[in-house]
Image (cartoon, rainbow, N blue to C red; front, side):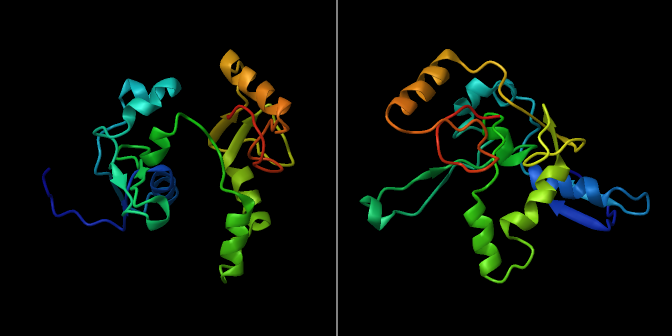
Length: 188
């Protein structure tokens, strides 16, 4: 890497989902010079773009390969925590699954004093970011930069799993980003 002594108005470290979105927003004016830094390689690996192959990315060159410290409540086991080291960050390692955090997480942040971070406060921003096919005004948006769609043809094994879960009392959930995250279903 060469250093050319250029100055920048903003330096964004990490080209994951949030870093890329932030750099894009900041660069919206010709008066701003934005530098986006990423430690990893480009996201041109086939496994990133083929959802069934995402487990092949774990402990690879595009994964920071993090593990927790030994957990006393888990018999001192260390847990693997994949984190993306590539353009797209951890979103490049998730099998193209789009799922928001649980509403109680956001509400918990608000209760800690983070005004404006409650679930009902941020849903409008989720919706503004999305372009959801086939469209759903209550939980999803249209016209945003993030294309989100229902799974068109779930794998027969996935369908059998959802049916088996229903037989043992676990409800079908057609959209984990809508009313709740409990249940069994296919992801978008």
